Amino acid sequence: MPVPEAQPAAAPPFVPASVRRFRFLGWRLELATGLIDLGYALDGDELHEQVELGGPIAGLDPARMAALERAVALLHLIAGVSYYKTCFAPEISIETDLPDPDLAAFLHHLYTRGLAECRFVNDLQGREIAPFPSAASATPKVGPAGLGDRPLVPIGGGKDSIVTLEAVRGAGRQPLLFSVGSAPAVVRTVEVAGLPHVAVTRTLDPHLLELNRRGALNGHVPVTAVVSCLALIAALVHGAGAVVMADERSASAGSLTWDGIEVNHQYSKSWDFERRFAAIVAGHVAADLGYFSLLRPWSELAIARRFAALPAYHRAFVSCNRAFLLDRDRRTPSWCGDCPKCRFVSLALAPFLDRDRIVSIMRSDLLGDPAQLPGFAALLGIEADKPLECVGEVEESRVAMRLLTDSEGWRDAAVVRALGADPRVAGLSQATVDAALAPAREHALPVAYRKFADALG
Image 1 (spheres, rainbow, N blue to C red):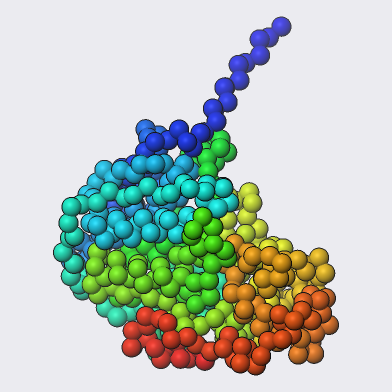
Image 2 (cartoon, rainbow, N blue to C red):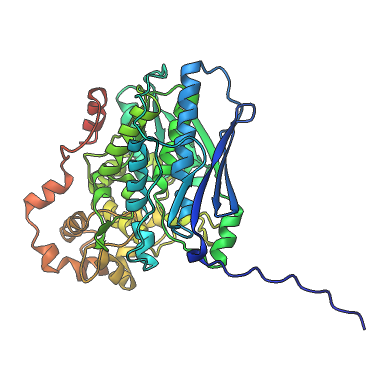
């Protein structure tokens, strides 16, 4: 009888607590190809992430090239969050130039706040983020890179970035659109916008998925911080002088407080992150490279009202995060119709679009489905915390539901009938409704861009 072939031994389980040191090995930028390699290690186990900028880098003067290298160095330190969270090692080492004390403090704050949700879902109470080593003294502030005033607008195929690009264009400027990857919703958005677009590709080390299967800690990371770094790099390569984000004021609201820290799924979209990151960009990358969110004064509800008036994009956009999952086996082709983000988008748009229109866009009538009632109740903070997702504040969700109770087309929908009668919804004053749709004063918009935001009113 033939002897059966020996099967390869299964890889041993990964034990996060066994990793003592997370190492930033270094980075490499290949100008001839536009390839960036970012190196990390869990003790001696190396991981390498790659970023493709889409072509060779040429024609940059010394000031811009120096700024580009500083931006790549910053990306290396921030993108490490995707690998550090596998183990939350008690020691961090940086085997290239050490950051100065200001940058080290920023990184520790970002990892602490940006990984709070990951710690929460993995029940890592008391597991603090290791301190980042730093140089002995602050480095001199950097000078300008000689950039122009063209805005670069990151897009992800969702409604917020669409509102931002159209507000910028409506004020007389032609933005350069930027994306990480080219998801179908991004491609459709670019086609409708008819604007120039550059994309980069980010490829996580495939060993990371293997580690996850073997027991590595996993959970949410502050991915917008990584995207922001990639946008800085694209801006420097293409000469844009401002990265104009589409992060709304609602992103600053956390879901709960745990282990003495606020857990906010959207931390790297928050006002706190924006202010801190903009200061790092100006002081450590290029003095003339702006970073701010055009939508910061506005709620998600106000942005949805503006998006409702842009019908050309209604068939293009997708805001369901399951359509953008890194794991392709779990990715959905469009709206999944059964997640907090799908529910919130339908709720936010419903006061400004009729029922048939929303059903045709999302391919489901979530507000008319009684099975969705618990999920909508959580958005309204009724007997549940706000979901750990990219959704609006509890108060504005209640305002949206309150508006639907006065809508002839929506008041009989099953979810609206059930939740609209709750005193926390029915008892809202007109002043509360008005405040949810009015801009806030907390923002960092340069004077030249304030009229852009005014166009949202």
